Length: 158
Image (cartoon, rainbow, N blue to C red):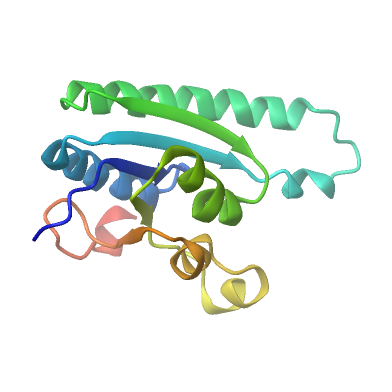
């Protein structure tokens, strides 16, 4: 029996990878008549090292996230998704995406873009997708291909 997903979470960070995850999430949500939750997590730890931090950086990040999520929400609704919610969160993206949002919103599928980190970056900071795969209590789909399920030609995109 096929699993039907009712509540799909997609993390949006402005990368090409998250754009592909969003595009595929829209298609999955249409097939399953699912609720789509689009989220952007502002990593507040990134601001802690800035000595002149006065709130302006977080405010700018929030405004940018609001604009981006509104555009994605409008697109998803145009594609026929009846219920599209948006959420801007503050804190650790790993914990919020893997645990907090799925518990609060009854998420049964998390869709993420594959990370662009190299081996050294993963060693020092770890990737969000690696953490989510290990700690989420629901299905996780890491998107590595376009809507046609073909590998992305990095040379064409550059």
